[in-house]
Image 1 (tube, one colour):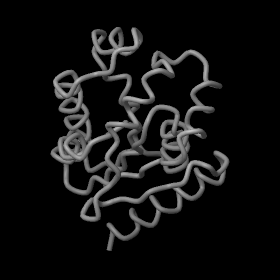
Image 2: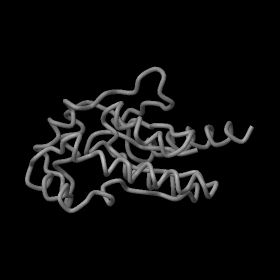
Image 3: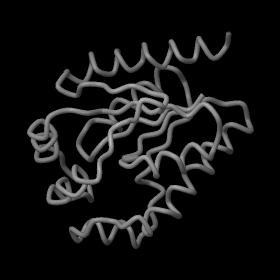
Image 4: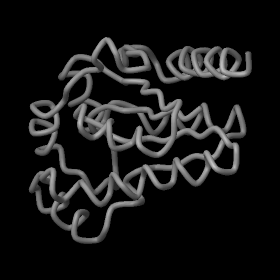
Length: 171
């Protein structure tokens, strides 16, 4: 199975996903590391990416999932995956892709972004992400997690969800 921790910038998806991957000893990918330099420059300048900008990036992420599927490995990824169309591309990598949506009030997310250091994504782009965000549809495998929790309990809750899904996949 493949678990994509999704949400807007500052939602805690990477922090939670890394903890889950480490605890379960699963391969981990931070989707931002797959962006081409042009995308990074665009976002750093405060310009939101277009669907056209994202398409090759999403295909590369789906390929990463697919490569691990071929090896028989479950994976964890942190990726914004804001729109259903984006998630559909990620699902082309393998069956069994689930989304853990790190979601919470705008003011909580804004405060986290303001406190973070060294990230290329400027706080000004949060608005465009919030406008683009499409929450999981009922037919999409996954679950929403409330990011108002502290990081440790949130990571534990996500870990238990992933463990449960991995256990049910083995049956």
